[in-house]
Image: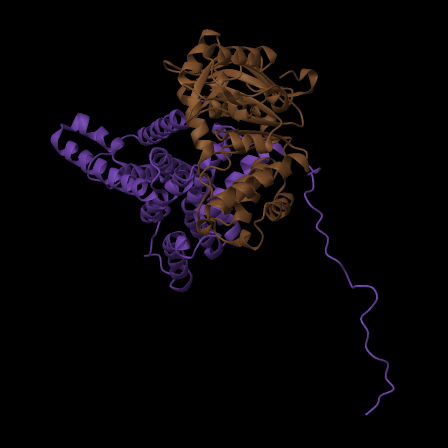
Length: 298
Length: 323
């Protein structure tokens, strides 16, 4: 059947064309060293959290965050729904619980921060960019500190928030207990720096993540065992100071000192500032090791 | 090589000592802007040490150097913003996509996040990593990894790019592609490039200038055209004892060697001139042997290398080139 409709024709002009513009020179801003350091911190944190990595890499961080935050939620829930004066759960109790989570997180994060870059030779690329070796190291320490800090600060701050909201007079409770925030931050910074620096110092000397993590956990367990054995073998005057070399007990003692609570520990009960001093000396030693490892030829 | 005020790299008595080993010995160098420089030498000759010194990856024992007019000791961060580096060794993380990694490296050179991601995509496309850029680097072939390494070296649009053994471990096709890419970066994009290699053919293919180092010392530097100007070796064949001819030539202070039935007369430092041909003619006449062949050979970079470096190192490099 004939049709009066005009035949469909190809348009004379194409709707569009694709051009290969070739290489384009960059004429925008160059933000320099500070930007590079910030970018490295963010990139390292993402890797530490397993972001943009396969799902198995996300398991440990997710599991640890759940483990760390669940007790604070449970305590807040109990306080909210079962009001009783008999239930006492202090920040020190919470720190006691999350210290193990922090320990495992530090064991996983330290190697994640440093070992891969060493094993895969990425350092030669970083060090030919707009940052020094010290910048690189500081960025890694910062990324590690921030991630550990989320666990060291997060649950106690959540508990503090619950205490404020569940108080009869939240505003007066907040102002009466505002120094608790300082204690939470002080303990969080110290314990994150302590565990983080040890883990990073170990990771700086091996390319294998598994080996670094195992040395960290195994080393802490071994030191703890030796410290306990020495405490039993030595007389009390010397034995009391053994706690300063016992990582597990030192963290708990540090929390007790910060919160003004008794340590309830078997091996010693020194003046609190000794614990702070021991933590700072350990951080300095770990920092020196990392410095010598990375900055020897800068 | 004289570059005067146009130099993009200058060194003066640059020295690097590792214990008792002098990896680089008092090197004076000047690299002109917008050129393609081949850094040639056997393995361990000091090529990588020179590159690492210029990038500030290691500190010089003594001497001075500038890049882009800035001192490598005091302005290394500013220099690195404008310089790219493609190392010889494997240097890519496995569990990151090519796009993420190259973008991250752009940020490490100071580019803002959005611009870094945009340029990473553009540059990966330019080097031939298109759809694959969203795949983890773990699954890449050697050739693809080399392209990603190249992309990270130019993603921040540097003025000068160092390539350290860029074709190492690549198959012939991959090597061809890589040399074409490097050529393009210099000829079309206009970046100054320094290609470090022990492969003479790679240098000859890509570079205008050559810098030869041997045991930490700078032995030759200049335009390749200039170095290859003048005659190369001379090939001689006679009816008679070729060894006798070699001996006669030695008496006339000409270096010659046997190559089957032929005698190869090595070109003197000043090149082959009439005096060389006269000496060969006279030696043949003295032997009273019929002359069957007397032919000059084109001087190649290989000839220059053998004449200046000589010995085992040169033979190794030439052998590697032939592989």
